[in-house]
Amino acid sequence: MIKVRRKYDRIFKERAVELSKNRKNLSELARELGISAAQLYKWRKESEEFGSGSFPGNGNMKQTPEQERISFLEKKLKDSELELEILKKAIGI
Image (cartoon, rainbow, N blue to C red; front, side, top):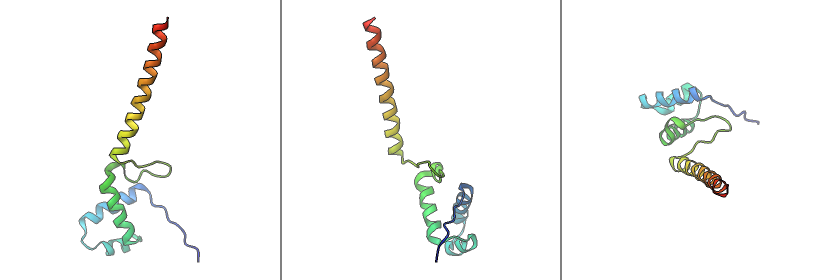
């Protein structure tokens, strides 16, 4: 039997997480939404961990604060190396 993988958009996931915060019985909510309870728990955990960066969509990576800092520092290092190269050329003139 072939299972069809369903894709849910960001708005649906965010609303499901909001509803789950107001409800006590998450299994019942999951049944009403047509998803598994495990999926709802996973979305809640992702929302808590990444905040507004959760559910980025296809091709976009969600990053933890540490990963964002590493990306920022790598960009800053690249810019500094470029500046240094420009200054070296200016001294040579």
